[in-house]
Image (cartoon, rainbow, N blue to C red):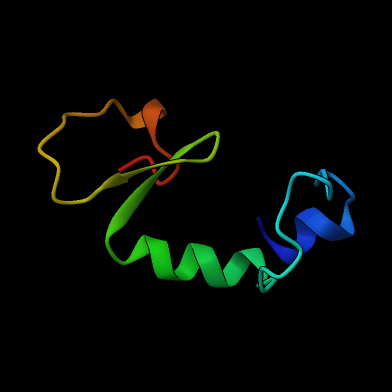
Length: 62
């Protein structure tokens, strides 16, 4: 969960550990993009995976 998730009030605080540090979503995405490909819907695929993808199946289209 990101800081934006908390700010938009989409987190169930009864079920979520409130001790988590709330980073901005841009920080998470920047770190993930180095090794992963964003598929959308919160799904990421390792760039090392030998899985053929259609251009519409991932966010960078390439």
